[in-house]
Amino acid sequence: MIKPDHLVIYLSGRCNLACPYCYASGVSKKTILRAALLAALDAFAAARPEEPKFTILGGEPLLCRDLVYAALDRIRELFGPGAPVHLFTNGLLLKKGEAARLLKRGVDLTVSLNSPSGGAEAAVKNIPLPLRGKIRAGVVATPAGAGGLVADILCLLKLGFGRLAWSPDITAAWDGAALARLRASSKALLLEYLGRLRSGRGLWELANGYEAIAAASGGIRPGPCRNMTLAPDGFFYPCDKMLSGPAAMIRPFRAGADGSGREKFFRLAAKSGVSSSQSMCPAAPWAAARFSRKGGPVPAGQAAAGKIAALWLKAAARAGLSSPVFKRLHGR
Image (cartoon, rainbow, N blue to C red; front, side):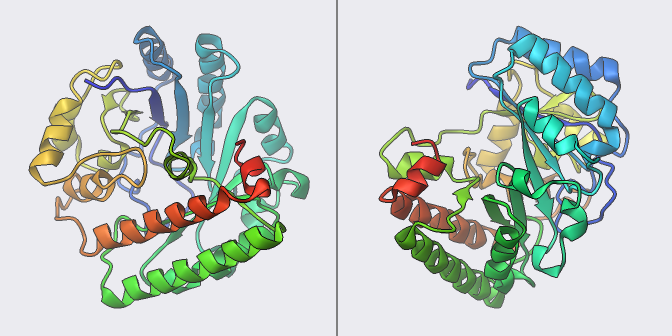
């Protein structure tokens, strides 16, 4: 059994937006009890994970602001000031000065935006421009909007973000035309990135590219998934993409804080020909579909869309390692 070292915390499925691509839209709208949250963190600490890290998301976690800070306090108490903590937010509920306070407390912020080129000023109004270079911004490429990938990334750069990521929608079907748009758009984005590598100006950090960079440099390649998910019901599950499923469907897959019981999920995935990984995990669209309330098959074209995204990261990482600016951005 591979022991998990990354705890993904869902405080609630509640959100102030309704993004159509959100795989977490069916997560329970109940909010985790404070006592259950703290007990789960204690249990994760007792399992003694190696190099523990944490991600807090939802839903919109800032709808449960008191729990965000309660979790952060307990993580710092149990795991020390250096344990990585990553918070995903749509940015709309950030209070004035809150981004700076979170960064000061060692929180790695990601602002997840729905079509940035369609207007994102409201999501970043309380993030001062000097801080945006320290904050991640991510976009989801949908089949309908796949052709706008370059415009979205350039918009984020214009807004002042310097750590950027994109990924394909794992909830939708990708037909031939949509895949062609995504392929062309990712190629155009790669050419844009290569031009910036050559000039050494205006380069952005590949916020989700560290596994690809490690592989391109001959380092340790990503292995099987080492995530564990804490759900709003206070129990641990093997994969956050399964949380949209009805309680009766996901209950048999509850796991221990040390990862015990995760094998049942991975055996089921293997029967469907799916394996897990830490980067662009192919089990993600499978779990989102298999454990949805409809319980349907993986939407068509998912493997191809994931491969396009993975190839983009691989090519950008390989080219970037020849650039001093790139290596400095990525701490190499």
